[in-house]
Amino acid sequence: MKTRAFQQVDVFTETAFLGNPLAVVLDGTGLSDAQMQTFAAWTQLSETTFVLPPTTEGAADGADYRVRIFTPGAELPFAGHPTLGTAHAWLNAGNTPRQAGVLVQECGVGLVTLKSVDGRWAFAAPHLQRQTPAPALLAEVLAALGLQADEVLAAQDLNNGPHWLGILIDSVDSLLALEPDPAALKRLNTKVGVAAKREANAGGLIRRANREARAFASSTRIANDPTDLEVRAFAAPVGIAEDPVTGSLNASLAQWLMAVGHMPDHYSARQGTALGRAGQVFLSKDAQGQVWVGGDVVGCIQGAVTL
Image (cartoon, rainbow, N blue to C red):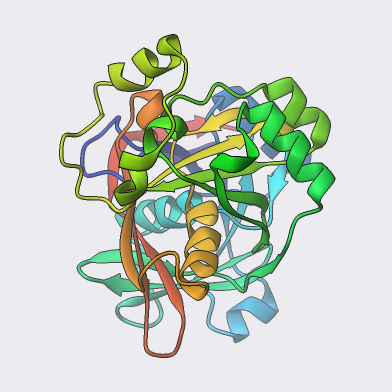
């Protein structure tokens, strides 16, 4: 065991404690998989990252560092808020990228590029594979969420490293009122991202009174919210009943929804409202068709950890 530099940051927010926290161990050298997983489980954050030197192949292709990403229950090949949060912590620790204004992260899906977009760091969304979900699985997931089929505008199986079932529904209020069954979602082994366009809210269904009251009670519900999409992420199979703000999900949702015309090439998403957070994710597609996922990061804790 040795003392290692450590930071805890809040991602997808300008204000500390309203985004998605991330633990970053800035020197993961010599740690076993089991040690990393044990520490990630102990932090009880949705993700914990460990920074390592790039592999020989990664360094040859321009990687500045390698990162391993763990939830409390499993390792992920890629995740969005750990990508932005680790980049912030790495730079804050005094490191300098090989190419000015560009960071290259090596992780389980390969190399991920980060750059400044509209004044904040953003990562290039990894390649997305998507397909229509199996009707039987979709029906079971809707039952676990407490949704009716006629509330669903579209659904896709999404895979950009992490695997999500993406569902677009017709009402922000219905989305915020959801009370899913985590045990059922874990049994189905399905992580689910549910979204609703803010402009579609007026036509939504009115749900049961107790759920409606719960949805409107959140202190982060913003009058005339400037964001375009409300998102919730349910990840019971990896030990997270609901994730506050999820970069990988927002990346795959953007690639899908932009491609089929449900969302424009530039929009922002709100996530975490039902948890008392106010995460904001900025999505944009450039002239080459690459989707970029950006957000603010705030440092909260800096020190050392013995591992």
